[in-house]
Image (tube, rainbow, N blue to C red):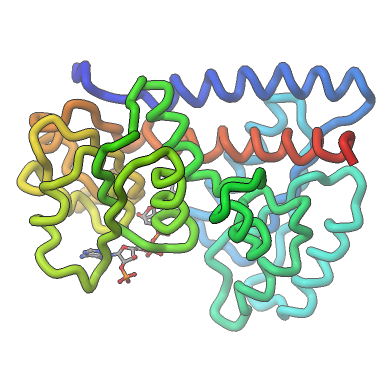
Length: 284
Ligand code: NDP
């Protein structure tokens, strides 16, 4: 039993409990928050994520629909589906599960989602708002990481946060959110020279690179906080992170496991964003 483990399931349960209460308040006002999840193709990992998302919606008393489209669906047909959801009053949040098949332009699809329903926070308008610190939908995974840090009483102000990964959905927004909380932020990526020399300086190390167990204790400063965003399969087909948990936990002061770390937080924050999208309709 590791006592320095940050339990994502526990933090996620607190977040969803709070969302459930907000949903009840909305329902008393005659409004049921609704989420539409669009899944293209039959990627089994994506199917699992999507099922978890719709099931959690139901558990919290929210309305959810899953739109399943064939792998070969045209971009135009997908855009028509998005447009229909934009106009559907029962739907407050729209999520198009990524990645999309190669023949579809992801940027075009993301930009077609109404920014008011963009609960993933990927629409360029919302990304821009996040960059300048305006209220908007924050991408669920980095939003979940910030919640975990807050819940674990980890003050990031003045700390050196090193992020491995610069994707639009995890790495980039992660750095921005940490910066907004006054961390000093360093981004690392596949072209970074001497990754270990960088990560060894981190007070907070966020790993989102997609390589099973690549980051072991030798990359980690004594006492650092380690957040493992990765979801991979190891040589035995077991779910694992980008961090080698067994070795890393010996040097980290706090560390998130996989599974049971960032993953549950991503879904919890999606629920929070969907609830917020519904609440926003009452303000306009
Ligand atoms: P991407 O593949 O989009 O990005 C990976 C990033 O890691 C890139 O910036 C890449 O650099 C960098 N990278 C790859 N290899 C190396 C290396 N050897 N050294 C240094 N940097 C490297 O992945 P995502 O951001 O979408 O996801 C990252 C991980 O997080 C995956 O395992 C994914 O499954 C998981 N994930 C988990 C979620 C959750 O809910 N827990 C949600 C989303 C993702 P470059 O830019 O130069 O190519």
